[in-house]
Every structure is written in C-alpha cells, then in structure tokens.
Image 1: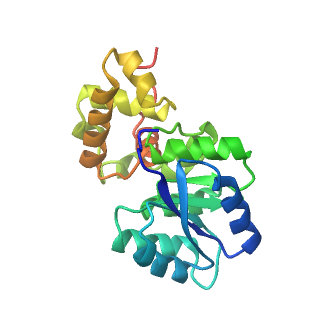
Image 2: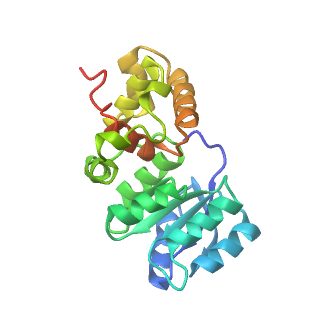
Image 3: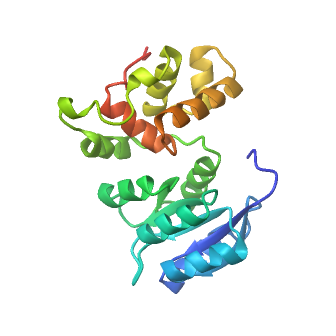
Length: 223
C-alpha cells in the first residue's frame, strides 16, 4: 500500500459480535490500527471527534440513527474521514444514498475475509475496481430520460483523454491498467482522475462509473 502509516479505523455496528468479528479480522493486519468501536450512529459521530480515525467502517442498519445519517453528519463535520459502508446486501438504494453522502464504497459482511481485506485496501488506496453487479445496479439507478440529461455535469466538461479514462474506470480497470492501455504513467492517470472528479463534482470511482453509464461513455476507447 502507498500509505506508510496504518489506517486508523473506527468500527461502527450495533451488534457486538459483528464488531468482534471485524476487530478479529483486522487485529493482526499491519495496514490497520483499530482506534475505537461504536454501537450507534450518534456514538460514531462523537468518537470521530475524539479518536480522529482515517476511516470508519459503518454499518448501514442501526437505530435510532442509522449509518446513512451518521455518514452524512460525519462527512459534513469531518470531510477528510473516509467511510466504508458495511451491509449484508448490495441494496442499491441505500448504497447510492451512502455514496451521495460521501462514502467511499461498501463491503458485504458475508464476503470472504481475504477478499474483504483486499477490497478494503483497494478502496482506501482509491484504486478499486467496481464490481460488474454494482455497475449494473447503478445503471438502473442513474438511467433517466434523455431530456433530463442536461442537468448536472456533462461529458462536454471533460477532455477527450479524460473521457477515455472515465470509460476505462467504468469498465472496471484500475489506474495501473489504464496507464498500460493509454501508454502513459500511472502518476499521469492519477492526476487525470483528480481533475475529472473535481470537474464533475464527484467523490469517488463508483460515482464516476454511474456518471459514465448515465452518459453512455462506458464503451469509449474500448478495444
């Protein structure tokens, strides 16, 4: 990983056994340092101010404040904290709302531990591939009548090269793979990615994939 210090992790889940399982999974992994646990959205917000985590692993379904509302409030108060949602199903409505509120991605609780850790590292390194199943669900969520596509950011805001990179992201390629396809450096791809997200007002690669699907960019530059 590019990170030289372990990611400071706050675990948020209203089930003690779930928190214990996540702690056990991360306990002996050098990339992560667990700095706290919370059993509710309210407690998570307070702990973010006290322990300053780099990333919050946030269960979606809690009460009285669920993970979606807690995510919204944490991102408003502590914009640099990254939030990864934890869920038992990839319900697109909840996940899309979480992404709108600023979450970086999501993890399914029933994923294999090795796959779980690999995906978590990828999310935090901003080099993750979007699962095809999630992309299909995003297509349904983003699909809109042609007349409404002029609202919000449009492909015309991007250069031809930026549109190519956006297409490759939507196809599931990571930065290294995109660099190889375009015969440019990975550093250049990362710079393009930053510019693309700023121009479009998006938070992450999952949102960018949704944008590409909505505007028909997914096949641009495809061999």
